[in-house]
Amino acid sequence: MKKKGKVTDVILAVFVLLIVVPAVVMAVWVFTERWAWPALMPQVFSLRAVKEIFGRCEALLRLLLSSMVISSAVALLSVVIGTMTARALVLYEFRGKGLISFLTILPFMVPATVFAMGVQITFIKMGLNNRITGVILAHLICSLPYAVRLITDGTAAVGDRLEEQARVLGASAGQAFFQVTLPFLVPVLLSSFSMAYIVSFSQYFLTLLIGGGQVKTFTIVMVPYLQSGNRNIACVYSGIFLGITLAVFAVFEKTAEIWSRNTDAEFYA
Amino acid sequence: MEQEYGCGILCLNRIPSGGPEMVWESKEHKNRSGLSPKGVWSEDADMSLKIENLEVKLQKENILQEISLDIADGAFVSLLGASGCGKSTLLKCIAGLLEAEKGSIRIDGKEMNGVPPEKRGAVIVFQDLRLFPHMTAGKNIAFPMRIKNVPKERQREQVRRLLEAVRLPGYENRKIREMSGGQMQRVALARALAAEPKLLLLDEPFSGLDENLRAEMGELVRKLHRENGLTTVLVTHDKQEALKFSDRIVLMSGGRILQQDSPREIFRHPVNREAAEFFGRMNYIQSGEEVIGVRPFDIRILPEGEDCMVKKISFMGETAEVILDTPKGEIFCTAVSGTLEELGLVPGSRVGMEMKSGSRLSVRVP
Image (cartoon, rainbow over all chains, first blue to last red):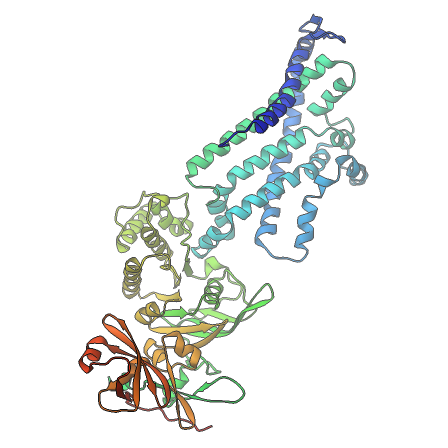
């Protein structure tokens, strides 16, 4: 960021516009009743959409709560499984390590719609369909690659030097991990937690298929509004969605920052 | 003194098939050689560490082979060797951080195979110190005690005592990043002692220090060793450090033990050329059927005599290195500069030469 050329400025401006313009349009739509083509500004404003959604405050809260429980569970599981996977990949030598490492990022490459059918059939056989557990497991498939990738880098950076030292000083494997390595991993774990949370929070197709309409999340309720003509209601939902996403990121990033400052150690020490 | 300093000559037989083989007179000495096939010190009651036939592989590559080693209780032993010879691997293996392919390690008579590192009582002070950067100096030292649930009061007392022992009194609340290299070294040492190990393993902990600090830390380690009687293994590639501090030196090369002996023995009776040259230069002189090795300072330049010529004098202050052209080939010797001046030697002078050899070693004729 030392020198900023004109080209960088232009690129930056394009990106900002790409994000800001839709967000602004969305904000305008929240208060719009009628905005027909080719008018530049909406013809009729109203608070109907806002009132309609916030009028059913209890339903909205319940929806948010169920979404948050599912996404939090997914995020927590992702972090725990991700940490264990990352440690296995970074610190141990075993046969088929390359293959496992590749498989952890496979869901990045294969779209959810492709494997969703297989997952659904399997889950129906296992009796996991239409249940929250099933949805959480399905979401894990999408969120784990992010967690594994992030935590693998973090684990590689922290290494096992300090853990080895703790071990010879008398700490068991668990004590060594929790007292010596974990404090340095916390920022990465928080990042992967928020990442996994958002990934799970925005799943639509998988939730619909595995949840079978029984498991209601925020996205499940929001998407039909987007598809039907109810743009203003969809935009209220989108606004809430955006707010939650930003809030989750902000909270976790801030926590990570404060944590790093308090542990008084460089992460990549 | 004659006995100790006398046998300055190493004899090497030329064997057509392989490298030179060492032969010597002293029977007692031969028995203690690391190369003798069977462990000779059989009574392992007072052995703090006993390693038998250890073999270690990393990524299918042999790192250590045929390592057999006995370290007496309370001894100070140096593992000496060039970098990459497997010293550090051996240390990690003793501490339980690496698994051995074959062989056994016993600490205080107990088989360590399958025993996790935290139960072995062997603490390593690593080259890179590995202080916990998120803890203060005091917390670092208290770490092993905290793990053992030692009462808080006693922890504080121990930390204070240990900081005093390593001459850092009052450093309890100092952050690691606020300390110099030497101070960090002392904290690492204090932390290792706080674990009350049966075996203290030092992995070149002073290599990052300048010479003065290095000597000081060496003295400190030696002093702590004397006071606590703790069995200590020091890994080093510095021969002076090894010769100065150790009761015994284990010389390693290419994942094997070349020789293990007291500093004086290993210097005076190296088992082969490699071991000999590790501790300094050596002249190899053909003497009848065999080749003998003579240390440069065992060669005395005599003013009377004509058969040698001074080829080159490298003045080094107190001492000087002289290369002599002799009938037996070029010979390298060291002398005190004062003596050379008294003799008035310059390149080209003709002199005589004598090999100091109090008790000449008998030689097996091939």
